[in-house]
Length: 101
Image: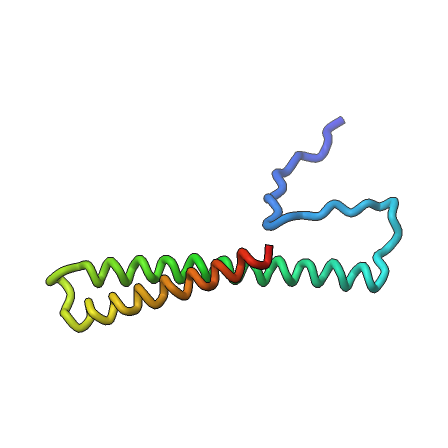
């Protein structure tokens, strides 16, 4: 007797939650709480991504500012100010994130 061929199941992106079939359906309050928690997690991920992007931008601006004569003087000067300002804002953002936990 030949069985059905096996197929590789693609991995699930993100975290998959196991649902206990023994428990009843979620109440409205439980569902609201779960959805609020998910929204907070997604919001934190977005803020962490913004933090990474700001830090990357600050590093890139510093590279240009320190690039010497390869870059025009006005651009080096502006990039230097952007790098410092962006790094400071990234630090403030990181401090606010750490306060939440």
